[in-house]
Length: 187
Image (cartoon, rainbow, N blue to C red; front, side, top):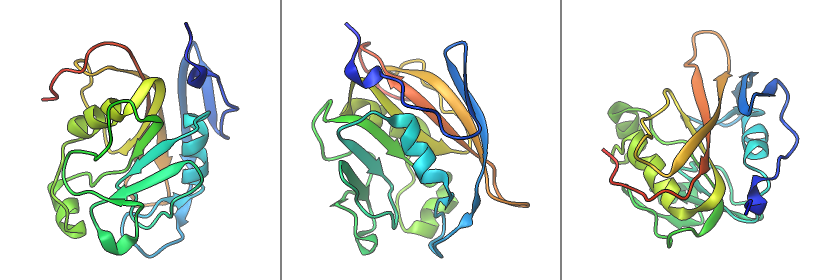
C-alpha cells in the first residue's frame, strides 16, 4: 500500500523530476539573518516544498528558525529558542514520530566548534532522522556532500545544488524517502 506522504507536491522553481529523480540548482540570495550558517534567502520555502505533504516535521539543528505549524525545531543551543533543546546525536522522540524530517547540521568539526556543539557525522544524523521518520515519509539533509546511506532505511530521491553568491560554499540538499528495511548501525 502506498503511504499518503508519497503524494507529489508541486516542485519548487528550478527543480526537475526526471525518471523518478529530483534534481536542480537553486540560486538563492544571501542570508537575511546575521547568524552564522543561516539559510540563504528563498531556501527554506523550497526545501519544505520538496518534503510535502506532511502533517508533522522535525527540523534538527534549526538555529534561529522559529517553529511553524506542524514543525518542531530542535537545536543544541538554547539561546536560539528552539521548540526542544537536544545536544548530541540522538533526538528525544520515539521511532516513526514524524511524517518528514530535515537537518542542517554543522558540516565539520570546525563548524561545530563555532556553534559550541559536538560534531556528529552526516551519516549518523541521517540514521537518526530515518529513525524518527515514518515509513514512506521524506527526509531532507542540507550538507556539503551526500553521506553513505547503503545500510540505512532510506532511498535517495534527489539532490539540489544550493548557491548563494560568489566565493560562498555550494551546499547540497539531498532528499530521501524512508523505506521499510531495518535500520542498521550507522558507521
